[in-house]
Amino acid sequence: MNICVLASGAGSNFRELVRSSENGLITSHISLLITNNSDSGASIIAKDHGVECLHISRKKFCTISDDEFSAMFLHELISRKIDFITLCGYMKRVPENVLGHFRNRIINIHPALLPSFGGKGMYGMNVHEAVIRSGVKVSGITIHFVDGDYDLGRIIFQKCCEVSDDDDASSLSEKVKKLEHQYYPLVVRKFEEGKVNFAGDRVSVKQTESQN
Ligand code: GRF
Image (cartoon, rainbow, N blue to C red; front, side):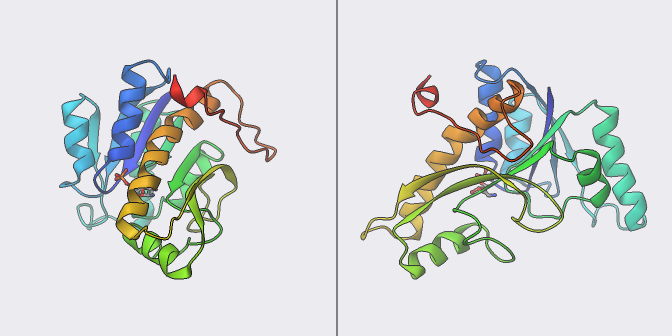
């Protein structure tokens, strides 16, 4: 598969996917990064690893209409024969036509156990602060399909971690990041192996697989 990653920020999950492709953990080629933020860490990682990077933002293309913008976005993906899209901290809405074209081939990772702690405003440290404030004893990661609504697409995979009494948002975020880096590539591998059941089964990733 040819994978396109959409990212806006630091890009640590993008980096893990690129590394996993380089070391053969996944067989897909991470062939394109699209970022809405030309200063993103992700764009530096792309450069370091020789991944093509496109800076596509509404601001940069402010003279064209919304429809033209969406058409251009989709064209960039199709012309590069992209098969699959992974979101890694992408802070913009994915255009409707892209969601339609890549139905069940576009996934996101969220740093908490959806459907809790998702939706508008639930990104970055906001998520972990809300988790700590709530007093729940577990948090974790959710990998899900992307549809039109924030964090509402069908859940593919979840992994939890303990929220200890002495955790704060920052220590929790580190625990969660570790899980993200460990499992996002493995879930992509499940897609490559055809093991994601689009009828709704969750993906099972055994602990031993994550240690390979
Ligand atoms: C991750 O925590 C991911 O769950 C969320 O955005 C964050 C991106 O982090 N969607 P990074 O840019 O990959 O480091």
